Length: 621
Image (cartoon, rainbow, N blue to C red; front, side, top):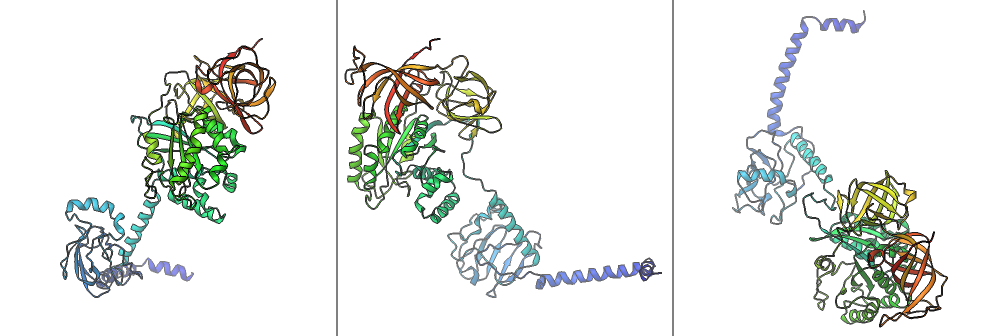
């Protein structure tokens, strides 16, 4: 028999239970001795390095008799262990003997200076319930406590106490992780809908459009401070520390590397009364077609100009984008223009009124010529995009400007009148695949609801709306002026092109290839004759077009039409011409539907003419 078997048999004999009982007795005695030793000595405590500013914490599961614990100064402090709530302290808290009542969570008195308890007032049992919930928030020393909260010196109370402290810290970390990100909170269904306003930022390259957009998002809480700090670090590594705010809107790598916006950036922010969509248009002349697409969705334009010496002049001279963008915004149907004179904090400007007035004097005559009324449609204001001065709050350096800062001014603007009961018209800006076909665009008139049947023109596809997002928030119904994302059923992404229109089946929009229009030639070196080709930009549609015939000239002052057909037109003349597109496009006459009846003609990277559709010519079979 093996020794193991002998051992197992012996353990079954009658002596085994005796030894177990003896073991239990020994255990009980040891436990009793340990308890008394623990109460006096705290033998098993973990090595504990005190944090002077930490709150005094005694977990509830310790005995509820008052215990005297020595602090590092050799004074005894009397506690009653009841609830883990931080106590307040008096100024000389650590140096004196104090009585802390855990019920009221305040130092009831200091036995030497007899000071009244500081901060954390209350002092009634009823307050305790509130205090228990918020004790972790008050863990930092209060303003009224120079020495911080009451801190224990010396060794920790017990291993259980140290363990309890660790548990609380873990709980705090979990709660910190669950902090909500600052984003727009979807409104409850019964709340009144805020008015949607689309604001396009236009202006010469490097005027500061994206920076102002990023700063507005930060000031209205749409971008977290942490995110901006990350951008700032990354921008600093590339020696471009002033670009970091624009990165909130310039999201792709190419735009960030070159510091130039290419696509129209989109973001949104809210004020008390309105919901704004920022459309950040590119300023570079190569990307003007993208800017036209952005301006066609806007209700309001913000023309950003740089007050820095030399920069304003470059943007405003012939070929500069300040002029071209202002004109294109007017053509796109923007009625109200805010001119932000940016970079006023620059050392060459230093909030100078003379420089501000100089920019104003040069711009007003030009804007008047384009068609803006200086008294009603234009509003000037100074600002600094990089520092955020005069965007949300007024500034002291600029004593001569008495108007509202930018964001409050936007909020105070009168409401736009929208055609809610008109036919559905949604020009498509962009499309992509994402669990079906998704289209983007601004609803110009009518209203769209979930599960509604609509028709895609000019191809006459019947589609169904599966879901509806207005500025990333899902809704059941949308009204004019909103920027929408629609998921459609019944059409493939390849069958859609930007410039197509979503209509309701009862009232389709007009489509065709030939139309008569009134055109103003803005800039063209030579003459324009029948047979001239250009690129037509109408709402969100871009199409090649040919002037097939010149019908008559129009006198600018009187509006009279010439009796004879002109053989050609040149710069600054107004004429009525017949135009023919390469493909079928959706359009309306300017009289019936202005948003779909204005257009721009561009050639060789320049805007050569602006015009409005007068009549649609039916196709001959």
